Length: 365
Image 1 (spheres, helix red, strand yellow):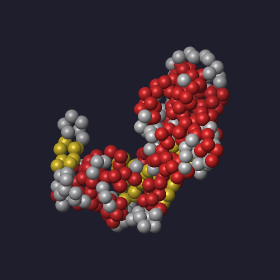
Image 2: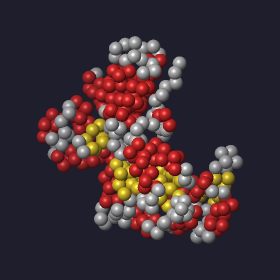
Image 3: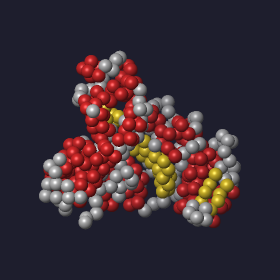
Image 4: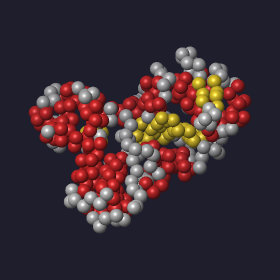
């Protein structure tokens, strides 16, 4: 039995990685210069996989930190310092740590081998974060700059008040670090880097990550399915018609289709069968999500699942009963920030095609 060649839900690499040659070259150019990069895309478009691939290829020392997991400014400093200890011997860092204004508690976990680090909480002192970021600068050189990746950078607003101003003040003097900022909340990220009154205004060059081109995705899918079915082109076309080339959901659906073929399913509704199985698996998740929404959100999502007109159009308002345009706009912004909707140059779309199908099926019960 052949191994399923599709991968989703975790970082994708090697044979699972599709295309992105242009984006890979562009990111490589930035980290090989003295510039910083801002990478924006909706969730599950493959930002993390792409950046990690470039970092791996570069061979340079790097730090990756997802700010969604950071609890406070003290924790921010502790998580960064923990990652520094992964890169450099403790003996080399000892002298630098002694000069910190607030000395952290550093414990080696005998079970995991990880260095556990904490700064005194509740002090509301920015010194630990400033000292840690400046340590990264000291450990790098102009010839061998360290790379620091901050994922979901818009989370700085939650972590600490005025943190954007503080971070810019520290980072702007660094010459031995390449910063890569990533974010999925486009409105917040653009506010940080493109609003003239923002401390980070034009601090990094903007790069947006789009869906993978359908033609390239087709080549990838057909090449995999050719090993297991004669209907490889039909299968590929059906998958992409449902997922609209969304990287995550395409891999997810392809994975499930492959499993059905491996189980000797021979029905003509192969792809639809896989969709049904995915929806059934996530039924409870979709129901919990639905129950967190208010009435306006529900009307908008139902209208978008059932018809193709713009949710901002008068036709949509009449069909769905969504009310005033200002109310609709606020709801669209809220749903986009939650990652339920995706906004592109072509308009708003329900991000998860299986959630969209779930809404339609629930209406038919």
